[in-house]
Amino acid sequence: MVYPSAVLVVFTAVLAVLLGWVIPSFKTIFKDLGASDELPYLTQLVIAASETFIGYLPFFLLGGIGLSIATVYFYRTPRGKKLFHRIMLRMPVMGPVLRKIAVARFTRTLGTLLSSGVPILDAMDIVAKTAGNVVVEEAILYARAKISEGKNMAALSWRPTSSRRWSSRWSASVSRPAPSTRCSARSPTFTRKKSTSPSRQ
Image (cartoon, rainbow, N blue to C red; front, side, top):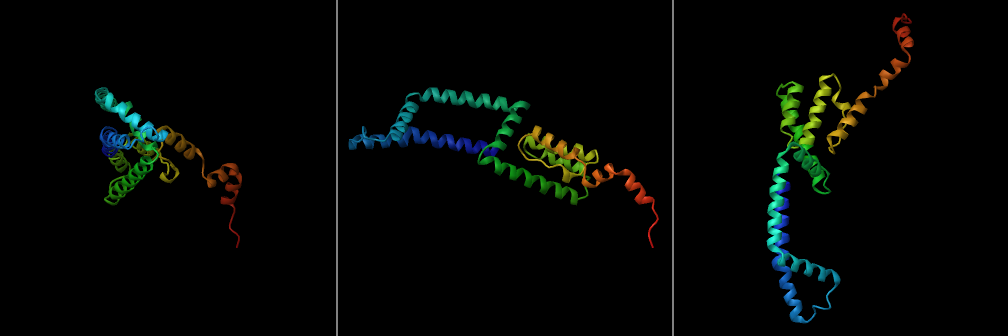
């Protein structure tokens, strides 16, 4: 949460500087040159946004402070934290980066624990606590539950989108029997005859 918060704060500060100081200076330059009425529509729109920002600056400050406080309180709730983490994983540019960070942290921590002799279930618990994302943590705990039931970790294919999709995809992949299991289930008599027949010399 630190990295997205830092990006959001920097973005807001840069936008405020542009709307409050940079664009008004350009407006003055255009007015001195006598070209304020011949500006393109997009430039006039940006200047109008700057004027609106300067004219209603106290309201924007109060609204920003109130929105920040409400966001912090909502993030402290379990539902809000999960919603924020899910949105972060779905963001266009930042989402793939956060997913790669989560996968790298998961594999590195799990490999270190397993090489140190920690049991797989205890290692999965530790990795889930260090995931840094509620959605990823729930997915890891789901994988741990399936592994404790005797499932193979390679069969648990998941994508970091949401825990519900992870659960549905995992359950679908786990419920499908392997090809060898299908063959033995379809022809149990053939398998039994083959195992009891004497070997040919």
